Image (cartoon, rainbow, N blue to C red):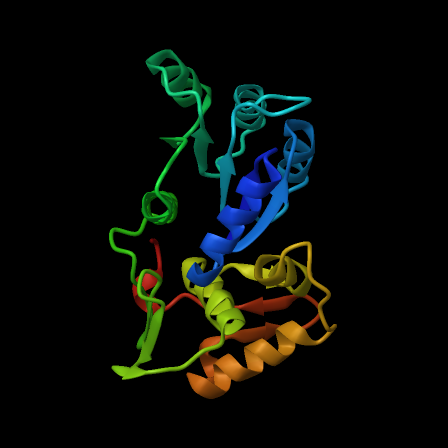
Amino acid sequence: MRILLVEDDPSLASGIRLALKPEHYTVDILDDGISALHALQDEEPFDAVILDLGLPRLDGVGLLERLRRSGSRVPVLVLTARDGIEDRIQGLDAGADDYLTKPFEVAELKARLRALLRRSQGHVTSELRHRGVVLDPGNRLVTYLGEPVTLSRREFTLLQEFLSHPGHAFTRDTLTRLVYGWDEDVESNAIEVHVHHLRRKLFPELIRTLRGIGYIMDKAPTDEGA
């Protein structure tokens, strides 16, 4: 899952990214509202946004209002020191999906983010299932036909993206940004290698290559119409 963190406190932003890394989130950081608005309106593939309200250039409320007016439905968790009831109402009315005040417990941030992502993807539980594959994001476990499967952090992240969006065609560039974000140098064949490993560790038909486009995990029969 790829998260955009919009926070102008560098130490806090780095701490949140470090805390979320073991959860297999790819976290990109921006420190002002205008840059964040441009990134989100450019259709960067983010699964959720963690948003501070007190931002330079464009504050969080203004960013939320513009984002929702543009039709974006990306889930937004507001993370802010503004703890008054009027501030909460303003943030939620502007389009926030959840609201967490500073200081906060990392465990609560993780739990709220998991719940936000489940709701946005229409999942009742956190487990993702597809043709014998079960991925448990909370415990970071994968099984196939009941047997545990060991995946690298990148493989787990890639599999979670496919399982979260069955039937969706991903370009290689999109998958690269989802798995690696902006800040890492990536080998040109990195995604191909990860897909190869997933097919070998699970089953070859799990992920289908779309020539000239990228990859897709076809919907299972029970997914149709979901």
